[in-house]
Length: 410
Image (tube, rainbow, N blue to C red; front, top):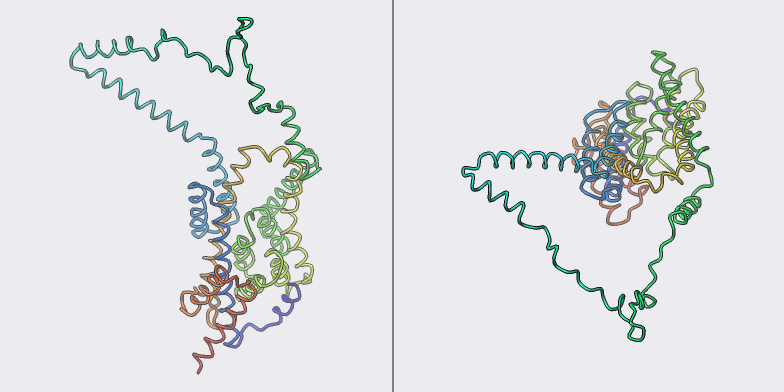
């Protein structure tokens, strides 16, 4: 990606029309691939009606607004929603109000009875009708568990228990040891070390964001580092989520042109490895033409994007032995994951809105040209039903874009 960024930085501001047609076709195929990834991720994340609602709300809210703080608030709110729902706090509150209004209604009905005789009948029903018959004798126990020995005349209990299957359970201490041993197979790191690593991450994150706010107008290198550090912290649920964030943090300030950004998005989908490698490309282009060498910009972007995730993952490896069987923790993760998947649909929408490139306009909706819409559908259907790999789908999209230009020119 660094070599690609060096080559792209030397391209002029204006390109031939066939190149724009090629880029538009690549972008359209990329949108189809990411849309397919969003659908597949949603099939895994949706486990009930609540997660289905959170996926849809996450996608819709992400389309309405974009800011540094906005996506973390969406995911945190989704985690809180699943926690409250799974702990049945809303059910308890609803039952409280139902019982409260039922008592008021019953009291109102009692006060408005017309005849005193009705009141007396109600009182008699409450006092004379028993909930159960106390005089009824209890049924005898089954003969397999209680019978009288004819030789001794004594009652022998549980004489046939040996024929029943064993229902012995391990003591609580043994069960805890088994869970700890099973969790220990995941990581041998202590929870104290994991907590220390998480604390280091929180401290570095707070200092980075605080210095970014206090400094007012920091340098481009530090602004890029702090923005990508925040993006690497809040990304949860898959690489496509990072695309609209990177466009907001890198393209909106004017560090990278929309054309170069979309070219990198199309190419990263066809390369092996995670989408986070895209930041190497963006970091190099963001520092091109400045006093900072391009390789330092690429390295800064790489460190800023990967460091938060590594610290969080390594820290939770130590805490996993404690948190892996906590219902509240799993509930929060379920909601955060659902909202993150919804943000993948946001990425599809954002790329759709800027995917069509021409010499006059750097980014129009793909719906402007029906041919590009057909390319999106081809990439989606090819990957979903015909097992078309992403690199082949992207190359096919580029070829179809050039074919459209050739047909129109002739």
